[in-house]
Image (cartoon, rainbow over the protein chains, first blue to last red):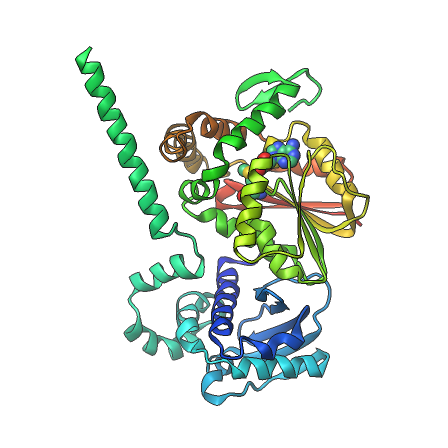
Length: 197
Length: 250
Ligand SMILES: C[S@@+](CC[C@H](N)C(=O)[O-])C[C@H]1O[C@@H](n2cnc3c(N)ncnc32)[C@H](O)[C@@H]1O
């Protein structure tokens, strides 16, 4: 089935979503620059990744996903490397394919205003995951940096814990452990009582 | 799975029809408090990926009206509420008050309010007008519904033309070897974990059994066509441990 977003795509959309929301929360302006985009959808393709991402702005901040029913309010084409160097260049070369130019501009301006080290967040995607999709060019470009930055273990841990939020938190694990210990103690007590019979 | 006999499966035990509703309620009453943690531990967190998949594929957008049926503690409701914005609306509907209460408190704590409604309903008789929702979801809920055909018909009725139903549910594991392991896990490990975490072995035994009694991928797809859906398809996740069925009303 072609319309199934793979794990890679889900993981990319989810990462961009979390990173953006964190940045907006930390932003001095609290994301004021995005307010004009409320209830709007922006479609952006970041070549060489072919599947578009949809950015949706609501009063709960940003959501990013791979599918959309209906049309976006603005459709933009750009590329991933430009996106990742955004914090340095403070501009995102792009083409407006269709939709409202004003919305597209507001989106790009707001995005450029945020202090996000996209490269840090996305390099292991491009390295580890996207590479399957987008071939060798970008992979080699990123690999040099990535090898020095992160061991596979770290990447995996981050991938599981932060990006997909899949693991129970430490406190949940502790509670679980405590419950196991408690049960163990009960079993022991029971055993004692049986012995005493 | 015949819906006409006077008894119906409750897990593997056959019980009179009206009793199943009560028993299912009992199960969720007893797990409500620990439900979220249990979900994480049991699926090793994978249920979040299944749910994220579902949200991505819904194509949801600001302004949409969504029904999260059997919404329980509100995982999907939360994600949808963030996406439909002020102009949209999400209805979390569930038969069990305890689950809805846990869900509502949790969502309000996380700042999700204003575009979410909570309501107690039985999936077999939805208290909504025809053609109300853009997206309807029922995640890990259909398994517990006594008359599934009726519930799917109701979901079809309340969908707007062009709307999409998404049924996320445990299904039939496709890979034989993995199926063996999964059976062992479900019947030996899972109830024990239920006992440890929630001190509730029986409920998780029910869970394992009810999964096996649920219609498989093809059967459920046919049930969707029978209920009136104009297009239906499914997607296996994690080797078919879970399947996402999607149906469209045109
Ligand atoms: C396993 S929970 C799933 C909750 C949530 N959708 C999730 O994915 O985390 C199943 C839910 O189905 C609800 N339920 C069971 N039978 C139902 C019925 N006939 N109508 C509506 N909800 C029902 C239960 O109360 C419970 O909250």
